[in-house]
Length: 222
Figure (spheres, rainbow, N blue to C red):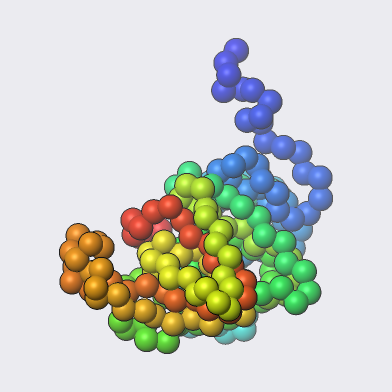
């Protein structure tokens, strides 16, 4: 049987070592030897001796609420084998954390991560002013995190002299040390979101960077 479908770049890559790696631009392969965590519904294939356990709200320990972002529930994957993860054909990126690194990520952009990473779920102050995307997870520790993005992300430097304002529906994540707040821009409300009368952006200040996606389209958590 002959077809470009079977081109070498489409074949599952052999496992080089435990952990995650990009299968291609749209998916992540994770060689499991123990435990890892992923968003529910993101597993597209697996092989080997793996158990998938749904983590609901109210769980203790590291999965304090087992929810990140806009109601994004997590699952643990345990055992030995290989699993592939993806979400709506979004572009996948792997972030490797070293000691001292800290990154805040919107839950809708979390794909999977090493169990060695710790995270704390936070809600932005004044979150009642705006819509979704204001529950975020601050990741710390050592290990890898895979994030997913609609389109190609935009990484914007933030400096003490130049705060950055981003749409709450477009933000993916930011340096955890940045100060955050919500900013009303009534003067341009008539031009944003079809003339809603008021627009609210996330304001970030300090030293670091913010990552946004080139889309304001909201999506369901699953």
